[in-house]
Image (tube, rainbow, N blue to C red; front, side, top):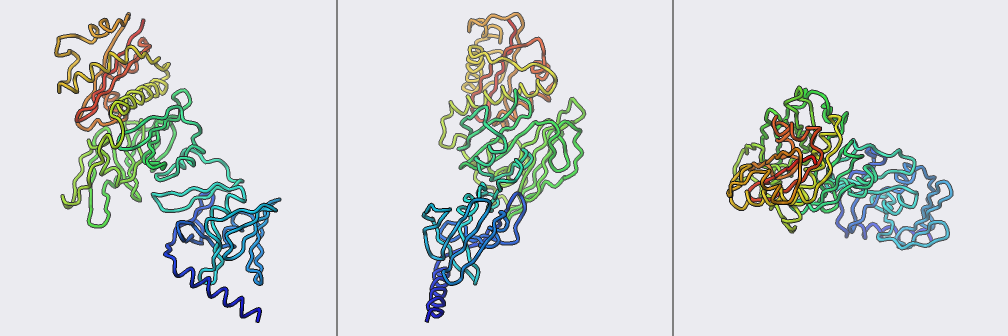
Length: 434
């Protein structure tokens, strides 16, 4: 009679599973794709009992009569029972979001609960629709392991505490990470997942191209296809695009230094098509009807805050360039930044582009009007239909010899930057020494 009851219980559990929609996902442990797959049941990831316990270094025991599984690792013991929403870690009881199930004769247990109970960290990658687990014995990843769709918490486990957190365009949040402007990373997050990555860290390698070395053109694929959509991205002399596995890499080249790679932006190819921040790339479509809707620049954000963000990021990027050329970073001068902003806003509001204002005032006149004293002063201005963010603007200025000289002039010590948006980003950089 006992055996009949157990068989009936198992049969009911199988029926319970088939009444719930499910689909498979890939599981990575310490960066390695596992032979077993996870299954989403009621928004929770379930994985084979033996696979997850053993891969995380635990001894596992299955007790058929009580339908109970126990995993032990070091001094931690985890016990779960089929269909029971209450689990045990040692003598403590915990309520599960999803109880263990038997699926296709395999005992499936909740991945996150098991992993975290055994000291591992768990992250969901929405871009690849996979689960990434890092065990307690796994060495900390390097920034080279960052990927599109990676969770913010996981990224900051790699990069550390951000130096700056800013409101980005198109409903993004921008965070920068650096050591006094060395080893610079700028990460754009959307919905708490990596949207794009930019870095100027010397020696970092992407698709065989190293930052700080002459561009080789190893991967020249510039075509992205998905369904009926085929898009071809055109590179230029100073920016090269390569696409692999739905991820685009934009290599920013220094045309004044042997076409060395100055920085790399990594973004999904689909985002590259729809993000207004990089619409200065010539894109050809197989069918005009396939052209995606462009994400509004402001999103739900405040334009004034987004403009301040671009000014702040431009300052960081200018300082990374100085550090990479053996110079001291600029000091930020807030009063000078206000003078710069007013000129950018004047140009944006009145649709002109010039160092001389419509009222006939030069950069030096504007600085004096703003009560700015100086011994040496200079100004850079930037605007373009495709310059929608500080990365593009900075890159353009660094490849223009006169503007580059101002950014890398060791005699100029202080910098104020102002940004204003109107069908493109107007940037004014005011430099002084006092």
